Each structure stands twice: as C-alpha cells, then as structure tokens.
Image (cartoon, rainbow, N blue to C red; front, side, top):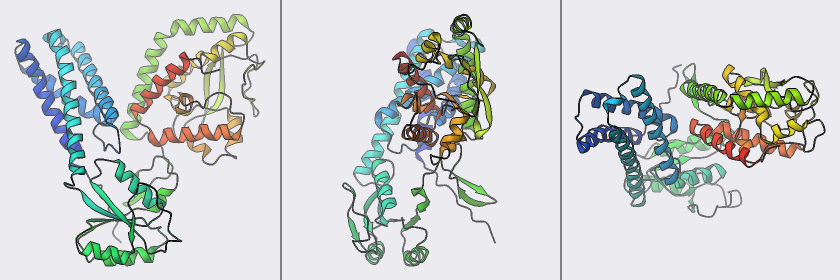
Length: 466
C-alpha cells in the first residue's frame, strides 16, 4: 500500500510581500545616499542584500509573512515596525563589528531607518487594503457552502468571515437533519439554505465554488455519499476533521512513516523556533545578570544578615517534560519547605521574613532564576513552576494539568501578567492559571514572549505581586 502524501497549500501572499519588501529596501538606501550626496558603491549593495536577508529571517519569526488570521491593522503596524527595528539593529551591530559603520554618514543611517520603515509599512498596509478591497468587491472570492449546521461549521464560518485574506465568502449552511436536530443558528452568520440535495443542484449550476464538509467523522457513509455526488462537479471540496472540537495543544501536521498525522499535545518550540527562543533566553539573561548584579548583591546581603539560614533556596520543581529541576530563589521565609507537603505562601504569612516580604512583593526573590535560564532548565517566559507537592495534588484534580510541562517553566508567564498569580488556594483559581498556561502554549511566538516580558515589568512596578 502506498503512503498517502498530503501537500500543504502555499499562499502567494508571503512571496509578494517578500519581493515588495526586498525591492523597497534595495531602493531605499541608494535613494537616501543620492539625496544626501553620498556616493553609491559596492558597500551599498552589500548592506541592501544583508538587510533583505535579515528582514526575511526576522520577519518570519515575528510573523509579518504569515497569514493574518484576523489580525488588526494596528497589530500589523506594530509587527512591521518591530521586524524592521530588529533588522536595523542587527545591521548596525554588523557594521560596528566589521568596522564599516563609519562608511555611512549618520544622517544617511537615520534617514534610511525612517524611510525604510515608512516604505515597509506602506507596502504591507497597501497590500492589506488591496486584499480587503478585492474581498469586499467579490474579486477572486470563492462562494463557499458549509455542510453541517453544527458547532464546528459555525466556528469555520466565523473564522473565515473574520479573516480578510481568507478569499472565501460563506453563502450558507446545508444539512440533511431536521430543524430539531440542527444547532440553533448563531446571530451574524449566514442562514441555513437547505439539504444536501439542494447543495448538489447549486454546485452543478456553478453557483457554489467550494464546499466545506464539517460532518462528524463517524458519519462515514454520509460523507462518502456526498463525495460521490460532488465528484460529478467542478467544485473544490474540503473535509474539516471534527477532532478540532477537542482542545489541541499547539496542533500541527506532521508525518509518521509517510502518513499524515496531527499532534494533539505537543510543544511549539520545535526546530528554529526552539533555537530562537533559547537565543533570546540566553542573551537576555546574561545581560540581565550583568545589569542587576548590584541588586543581586544587595538582596543577598540583606537575606544573609537579617535572618538565619542560607541566602539561596533551591526548591524541587518540575521542568520540561516533567523532569525534576532545582529552582534558584532568594530565601524569603524562615523555613525551607521542600518535601512531599508544601504549604503555599499567603498574605501576612508568619513564615515570611520582613526582608522576604519586600522581596516577594517586588518579585526580587525570583531574580536568581536567571541562573536557571542560563543553564537551560528554565526560560524567561513560560508557565511558572509549582512545587512538586502541588503538582502531584492538582494533576489529579485538573484535566490537562501536566500539559503545562510541554515547555520549559518560566520566570514569568502569561498567567502572571493576566492577574492569575499569587496564592491558588482553590481548585478554581488553579484551573484559571492552567487555562492561561495552555493558552500561552497554543499561541506561543517570540513576539508573544516579548510582550509578556514588557507586561511583567509593569506588573512589578505596580506592586501587584506578594
């Protein structure tokens, strides 16, 4: 039996954006040099080519060359600005290390940054506006019907209608079930149009270009019958597997022995993404240790001379894939609980030392975890590690609890900046935190990590921790 090969559909939009950005970058620097009267030479060409390569790589990581999936115009502007700024910083660093930075006038460098950023924004927003205009006016849009008036079908319609670059127009739902068995229609969605017999008539009269089958996989006979009828038409037909109604943790297509499979629980930090996250962790934590070394020293001295016991407390926690790690912290309590039973800290906890109370309120007790990041057992951003005793307790009570360990634990995380930090004295509070941890894993990107780091700063400044 031959293995089935499912080929991914490749959009032309990223290619168009890549080409447009490269052309603009190659025009921008020579244009600026011409304006300021600086000669254009081989170094200009080299700088332009390097800028194109760097923007290509950084743009892929940040996400400006990925499908927008309903991304707002403001988000598009932010991501483009971030990608170009990171590219420009890298160019400056290369220029400094190669000692070629002095070949360009400071005015040329400043003008290229401003002009290049403006040109990139104009390009991306122009292409975005063109796509939206084509969609609103029906150019290149496929009339699409959904078979299955169910929750999966409704979710597909909502996603398609929210994405300007989807290229499809949902004309309605078709289902052979009677009104009593169909799901009640959601407000704002296209109406129910009839049964599959009426659908076949519409398809054969070329009124419908695309059919999305959102029937449950157990309805194999119904799906096969529908495929047999649609096979006698020119409509494009897609099957949407109903396993997407389950909570999939960063699902992705892959192959096992040549057969396509989809992950249910998996880490998003694969390949290049994992290396980039590690690079961010390592570089930022090393720089951070250097910058906060005076604070580390002061905190260590305060802990050492205000209460008896060690300066640092290394507590057993679960790391990546549930493997045990030792997490560094400044000791903030008179006790060092690290056994099978660990009582969570509460407000006005008598076990907390006076200095420890300040350290916990300002989150300074977490600073030594930069050592964990450098050694690779933790990340700057990720689900906060809980004491092993708490892990064993809550894994029995909360569905999917251990899935938070599919990524490295972090010094900070989404839960900490979304108000779900501090004491989790009820199962409901822990469930809320775990839900945010799962969301972080599903939606992870390097830009997401950067946003969480900035939000963490404001949370600490506002003294929302204890």
